[in-house]
Image 1: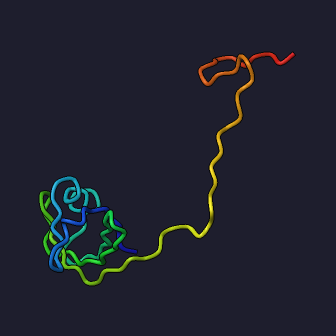
Image 2: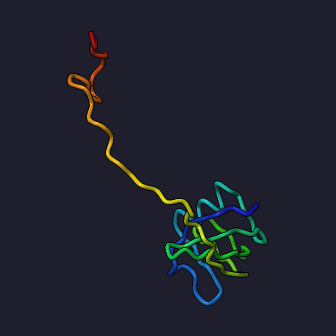
Length: 102
C-alpha cells in the first residue's frame, strides 16, 4: 500500500508535485523512498493525488501525478455531542485523592 502524505494544494501544479522542507526529508530520510515509488498526496481541499516519485533528495522531491480523485471521507453516521455531567462536589480533575462518598 502506498504511503499517504499531506501536502498543500499549491505544491501540485500542472501534473507535477514539488515537495520541500519536512515533507521532502520525511520521504527521503525517514521512509527512504526512491524514484519509482508510488505515494498518495492529499491536500486540504480533499483531493487525493496518486503520484510516482521522479527525483528524491532530502531537500526536494519531485513526483508525477498519475491520477486525482475526491473520495468521500465523511462518515455517514450522524454525531451529536453533549456536555459531560457536572462533577460531584470535591471531585476535580486536579484532585490527587478520591473523596470519600460516605
